[in-house]
Amino acid sequence: MKNKIKNIGNAKVTIGTESFELPIYSGSKGAPGIDVRGLHKASGHFTFDPGFTSTCSTESQITFIDGGKGQLLYRGFPIEQLAENSSFLEVAYLLINGELPNAQQNTDFKRTITNHTMLHDQIEQFFHGYRRDSHPMAMLCGTVGALSGFYHDDAHTTEDESRNMAMHRLIAKMPTLAARAYKYSIGQPHVYPDNSLSYAGNFLNMCFSVPAEKYKISPTIENAMDKIFILHADHEQNASTSTVRLAGSSGANPYACIAAGVACLWGPSHGGANEACLNMLREIGSVDRIPEFIARAKDKNDPFRLMGFGHRVYKNFDPRSRVMQKVAHEVLDELGLKNPILDVAKELEKIALEDEYFIEKKLYPNVDFYSGIVLSALGFPTSMFTVLFALARTVGWISQWNEMLEDPSQRIGRPRQLYTGATERDYIPMDMR
Ligand code: CMC
Image (cartoon, rainbow, N blue to C red; front, side, top):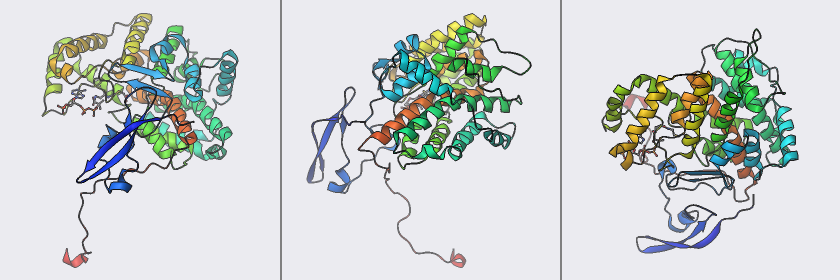
């Protein structure tokens, strides 16, 4: 990656009687950033930003979000256009390489990915080490990390060839691992990948076919699955992506870095939100109970939050939620499902969007508000929701990991702290405590 940030002036910081000039950098879009790298050396002061609400951790050319406008671009292309016109593998190629593939590149990329869909047979033994009621995310986290034991050569992160191999293997094997985790958790035999199917079709087949009965793939469902993957493919420097970058900044094995990303994604404030959102919609159950839950969300003394609402970056509509809302209707129509939960979701969205509390705090539905409904209609249990997110986000994680390793300004990530613990004191012998 060639660094492209431009110096557009200096910021003056005054600490006590001393002033310091700090360079201001701008990218091609979005807010500029003040370069504080030299601040500690010059002034002896750190910057303090827990939660990184005002900190750019890196320069990146992959994904852009304008939270105020509700805009999401992958390599410059609006998410709505990509969801409408492209496929997940095309988007994967775009995120990794920076440009959409031409017809030949597209065919070659598909063939390469398809060549790596199978797992080493010994991976099966890792699954058998898990309790049968283990969460599929636990299995995914462990088994993707375990791939590091199988592909030592891919760890030579300074070589393009090794990095490409790791990226291709991860895109190809994540669906197989995810489907295996699902099958193991419900006690069904492993279904091998079928390379004659599309990426999404193959994944659905591995999840829903059984040796006794073929799974008939509906084009609407296959298309919905592919769109869900596209919508979740990348989201700039979110918690799990930053985790992957931080793990990778030490030169760690790529499969281990992705395992770290899976672990971070698992939490309910991040990838676990759609599972939490669907559980919440089920708990609400009927439209007449919505005011009670809105009141709880507004009550400062109640820890309850409306799941699927709010976002650290989007302070306008999450553009992914619009696409997801459309997909929800397509899937429910195709399956002929009358889902009372969808009625609750629609009414909740309407009420929350008109409520002063939500307007003032700029809390809009995020992608997870509708994705849980779609995934549940496709036949996935809630425990699989975050697994599907991880499968799709793997493409973003490895693109960002690769970009970081190609960045000449890259250094190992090492934040500092404001220490508030005990000051220096002498050891107290056991009999005197
Ligand atoms: N329901 C009710 N109040 C909320 C909600 C919500 N969902 N989200 C934020 N608030 C309130 C919060 O109480 C705070 O109020 P106050 O200023 O009076 O203290 C204010 O809005 C700002 O919230 P915050 O927690 O400081 O905002 P944040 O940027 O740290 O959190 C968030 C972002 C997504 C974690 C949060 O909005 C949330 O917990 N939402 C529900 C969980 C969810 O849907 N997460 C999925 C995120 S999208 C998927 C992804 O990209 O990972």
